[in-house]
Length: 244
Length: 244
View: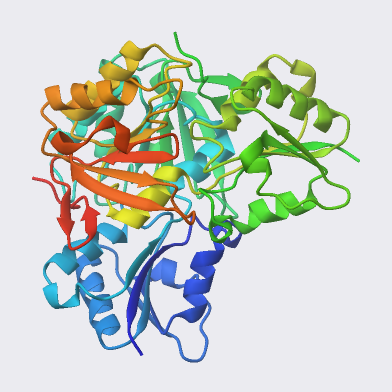
């Protein structure tokens, strides 16, 4: 049987947000690879081998997936959210570039509900106007580039979705990001802290940026900074469609 | 029975990309409102009233939905893609702001696969690094704001997803956008034209920005402009994770 590789997005956490095409790919898989907490979302069954691995092993995981598919496996790499947004899809194409003999393999990317969409839906509609998404991890890019992008995003008056705001190994960056945005005149903007969206311990909190503290975010938090027009109505936060 | 209002995203077109929670909301609805082509995706059944309407009637549609829900209906507004990205969710909260008596209504926003995620998945992983999303329609914002955002996005080296690049009533904007990006030094960047993604007549085309022509886009096209590092591997296009 010809092997194949599918890179699939599981959405933020709830099975009710997993698309049917992703569920079908999981049901047809012989091998599932991914960061251990995501692989743990797939129930074991006969004929399926689960290959959980640590975080930060993306390239190694991608190479292993290509190898299993070349051997005839129906291989699925799972990501949380969408696999193309700060997740496994780029790593697979990077691995493919180094493995020309695998370029004829059937590969599919199946999109998922990325964290900012799930968080925005719970908060209201903070991404209803032009926006940007910035990964605050500086493992793979210089911190100066992140600061520059934050300043330009503020000047463009984008709403800003911040992925990976803070982790044990990077405790400082998010506080610096808040400082950069204050200096850029965004102190009055609304900031949404969306933690563990669609999980049992889900929590949403909205404050003005001037009142935001770094410790309001952790590695399970997605942060959305509103644009200058973003406003509240009741318990909701939204970006108006019309801007003069 | 207490009424409720759900704003649900149908994804880009294929039923295989509709989340189970959205399918469940459609199955429980008494009334479904939306732009006619989106409402047409919901099969008629006893007990369900379909309320198709024209484009550009977002606020009127939102008010009608609030009214039906206040009368006890289980009302669903459908959007293509994700309802929070350049779609109906912001219009509903705008309507809610003008209707304080409706603020106690149960409202839910259910996310969907927005066009840029579906297009990116078909192309490879062009949104694997920091990116922005810009609605090129100037119906609700001044054109100068769009040009400013394009220039700043180029300077920030974001990948840029362009929604609504071109329509019969706005034939000129996309050509001007390409000119702005060329002037900003983006001529060598890759541009992905993703048309009718997940439909039978789906088409993907990638060219250098210098070779992009306005007529490559129409109202069913989502355009993704790569960042300076975006590259091809075989038939795929991706943004590398690591940037120096």
